[in-house]
Length: 116
Image (cartoon, rainbow, N blue to C red; front, side, top):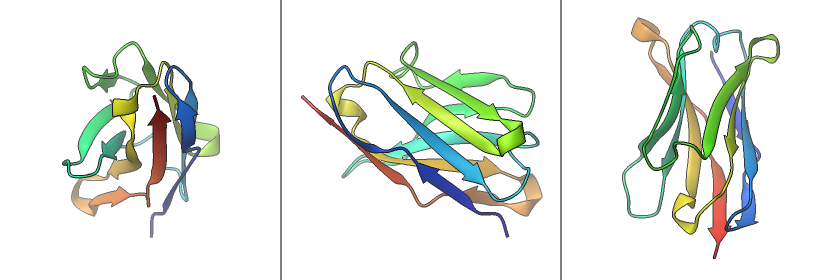
């Protein structure tokens, strides 16, 4: 059973930074596509950033040049560095790993609140 545990969320002022972590229970982050999603109250969950097994990345337009996705294969951990945070970045952030026919796995989420 794959487990993903997010951490690093919190309350920050606009313009500040946070780094989210997603720790996987097994060595899967270097094998499959993984990503960060977020869901704000009353809104649908949306993709924030993704990283392929080869290291290619893509970002939502709203976070380009502010957020950076990365991973440490040795630690089975994925990160989301968030800079220049805005109040509209406030949401619960989830990590997800897409394992093909084995299914998709989600973490439990971590709250990010950006005050103006």
